[in-house]
Image (cartoon, rainbow, N blue to C red; front, top):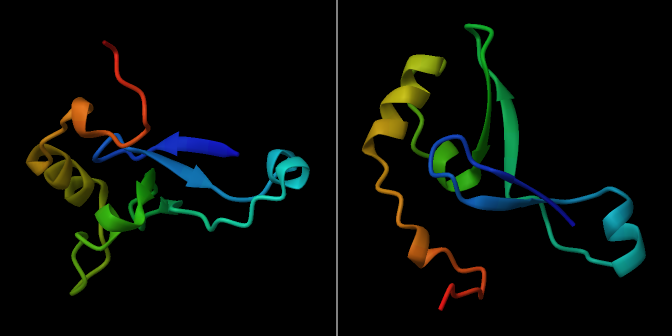
Length: 85
């Protein structure tokens, strides 16, 4: 299983496919995509953050930056099953 951090919320999300899924027969879906925006910038976003992009026009890097500033990152609430203590 491969994963990548969302450029906005920094949450590690699953990327389906690849040789890792072949050996463990994982059939889970992808939880994010790399978007190439009309201004030429590329951003990897989870589906939750993608839904927050403007729908009335083509999103830009400025929109991603604006969303990034509004996200409150709480590393303790990351549901990966690991606790540091």
